[in-house]
Image (tube, rainbow, N blue to C red; front, side):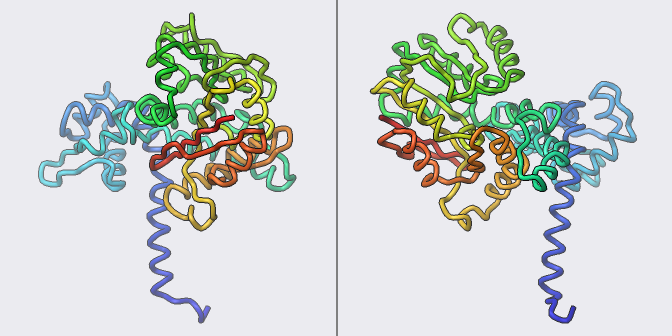
Length: 354
């Protein structure tokens, strides 16, 4: 191929080596997290492979040695060639050890593995134009998704997102009635319930296994007396009179988000607010050709679009729909006012009012 620019080719191959190295780290990171290797290394301080193997509960040293070298090559742990020990910096621990850190990303590796597990079903959908039912593409996709979003919710829902809504904080303190739409396994619902003990909450999701887990979480957190979970689609919710409706990273997954919006307007009090948290995205495709967009577009191809296309209407918004398209969908449901209340590096928060 005489038209190949060798400098550009070498640059591209270099990028591919980095990408393939990252892809091959998925399995080793997940194994290390499950075996407690990251935690043992950080909390116990610098260690040789033999010391870490013992510290982590008597694991096989040979495997631990190879794992440590892999993580050092990844840049996920540090290696002291003179002392022949491995260690972790506080910054590395924020990603791999501290579960409530805003940048705890171990669950992202679980999510990546779930997309590989569901590859065959999504490929079939490419051929037939159909969808893949939520939860069916991988053994516990909904668990991985819940765990992936949890750190962002822990660090933002109460601290940043709800305070950005006009007057909602005061109403929650006074005892608001809240519906959490697409609540999944209930992380978002329970975080709000614990922060606002005078308010009552109903979490809705169309996926029965998620609701079962959410109910168990509510009992474990001791809030089942004012938090309940129901398995129902957003369009079929009949209860009304909500002061606040929240939808976290779920509207774009729905087959009929316009129908959802119409029902949200019906069940929301006239002076209430609907908070829609969605992945951050620009309105033009080229605005999203960046590291965050890369993650979301790939996840959307394997999870969000197939999920939507499996449902009634099957609008297939995708995880990078952008504010303009989302606003169009929300207003199609009858809302007159939609604005961006706040945003972060991974999410935008829209506020819809009658």
